[in-house]
Length: 241
Image (cartoon, rainbow, N blue to C red; front, top):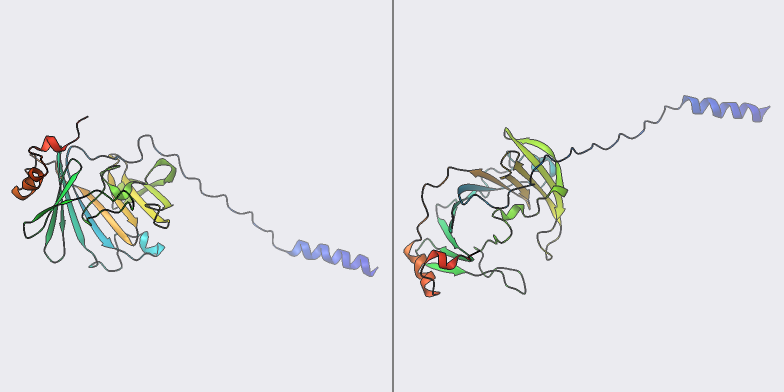
């Protein structure tokens, strides 16, 4: 009798327990809209500004790039002007100085504030590291921070500052020497041009300006560097298809 009573007691206890809820199904990421993940090359006549700001690397701050932990930190702007065969990359520093890098074909020539021009070299074939800190590798894309953006990292459509964007998220390394890190990117839904990069404790905000009205003219100091390398015209430095 005691055994039977204990048996019914177990049944009643089980009935009194709250029913366990089944786990919610994972949120499905919608299919990526038709078109490329991002435009790799800027229009031949174009201009854009990149504003680099240091941000707190915590997830909450990373989701709010418009509210950096310290708005005054690393407020560095770079203006890139693209006119077919010549590109100018002008970096404006908080101290009021600016550094110009002129790109002609595979050559990149830094024009220092004192007027001296020095040619930058491509990355060392053994280490993959440029000999000059001013060298930017444009071999894969005109927007180097976004090299990793592809359809496999699409994470949905999001709004950024009132701008409809494709949103990408990945945990990758920039090169074999670096450890993987969390990267995020916003790409304009319509134009597929970059809008915002988040990674390595920084945010890089892109803003595209008006189309340049004329071709860029190389400064005399830059032309002297080209001539010293046996290049007399811009087209001579640009690889022909």
